[in-house]
Image 1 (cartoon, helix red, strand yellow):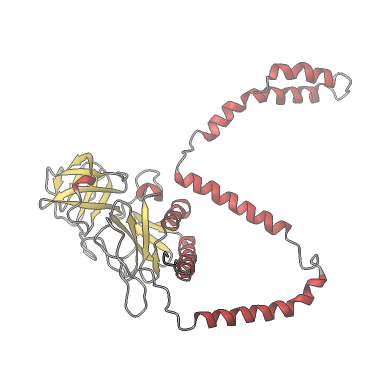
Image 2 (cartoon, rainbow, N blue to C red):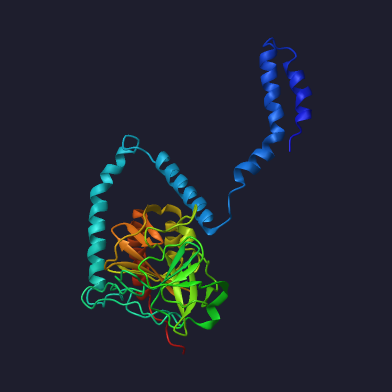
Length: 359
């Protein structure tokens, strides 16, 4: 670190022959004295940052955008391009047409590559299968939330955070039973479970233990015994009650780096693990709070985790609903882009020649 005391005699020596007056000299000395305050200022500005996957994604995304902007800025304009290039356009166009025709000929009669969604989850994953319609080859909508379209779905409220029971798995594997979060204090079958303090449920009896799920944030999911069976509950919004305090999307669905596959009903399945987690990071970065909830429809994003569990978000246009409704049109555009990229990669793999048998 630069010593401010060493700067003062240097400044005096450099300014000794100047006639700028005391005002200029004092200004330069003031700036020199501010140097030793830089560590304090930096600590204050960076004190709230957390080294999370979302921060890493934000940094990489900003770097990629800056690089793209740099490439665009140095790209020659039409007036700067060499006029001689125009003479090659007819030949290039003909070459492109021939390439397409040859490619069609090579692929004629070849079976199309399999559509994502035809197989079940990887070994060890949830028994809930990724499905597809026979007509369109796109995954069907199958809700995971218990009590679909019910006015009073099965819920647990823990100090203002609501969790809704999922249909699968039943039971939750005991190996995923985490630490004790709380115990149900009140059981009610009333339509409203509103309460910012205490543990209330309309499905778990009084005294039932509410557990964390091993490997998941307590703000994302919990578990509790219902009729003697350990069930999984996912964080949701209820009765206009959604986020608590200054929570963001990634607080309510903190699964970054844990996703094995994503399924968007009516669209497709992202089976590439890296692509799936990149999409989740995008939600953490760009999802903007839209409203307290959205109506249940016939579209959902199913999130298959590496530990075998499955979570779900309802989808309506470019809004995803879980614990509150979050708008993120960039997610759906990027989902389509990665789906095409995945299919292209699968097609290239299927075209690779088979290995020759050993002699």
